[in-house]
Amino acid sequence: MIEAIPADVRSLQLFEGVADETVCNLLRAGYDQSFPPLVTLIQEGAPADFLHVVVEGMVELFAGTKDREATMAVVRPISTFILAASVRDAPYLMSARTLQRSRILMIPSVNLRAAMATDNRFARNVVLELAGCYRSMVRHTKNLKLRNTRERIASYMLRQSRLLGNVPGFILPVEKRILASYMGMTPENLSRALKSLAEDGCKIDGQRVIITDRPKLEALAGLSPLLDGPDPEASQAGVSLPLPATDARIA
Image 1 (cartoon, rainbow, N blue to C red):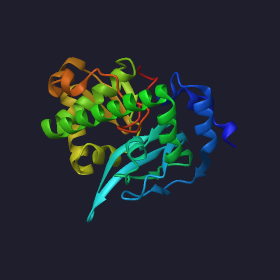
Image 2 (image 1 turned 45 degrees about the horizontal axis):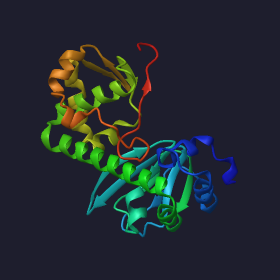
Image 3 (image 1 turned 45 degrees about the vertical axis):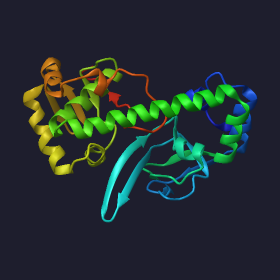
Image 4 (image 1 turned 90 degrees about the horizontal axis):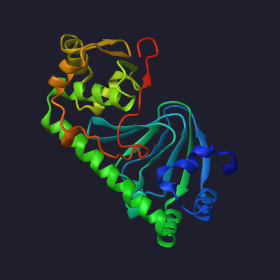
């Protein structure tokens, strides 16, 4: 039942300050469904019939061509995907599959566009969310094109630490194969790079990340406001990897 969806859905940036009637109409039009792991929810190239909201679980956004496939983002609750296609009534540019048992709210795109036409605050929120998505994608593209493998990983580790309050340790939120794909490298290259970071202030123990020398790691990454922010981002719109968990043993 839609009524059973957690109140966190109402707290989405997309719904901030939006009239209760608008939100209720969108939720009533939606479908609340649960899926087991490794189920493909959407295929790139298919019509964008729904805006998806991850209520529980974890979803990978990916794209492929020929025999190659790349992770574009990983979405955790409470987050939306893929907003741009729903707004433009255009085909999805990414596919999506569950990484674990997931609960997904599917809001028909036609209702989404109708709400934009009748509720100015909702339309404004959509524009702000899309702008955040665009800027996040530009940062990620710059990171891929302007940094080498080790610099890329160092900047990612520092960003995750910063988002948690500059903690010295955290748990990687996804498998390393997914991290490698998102970073534009092979798992083997990622493994070698992670090992080499020990001499630059970052130790990896399984999924645990321990920053031992922050200034040294920052020097390797070459942090820049134009590459790394800080910048208000569309953190609930599935444009990056999810926030990690703090490693309480060393935080």
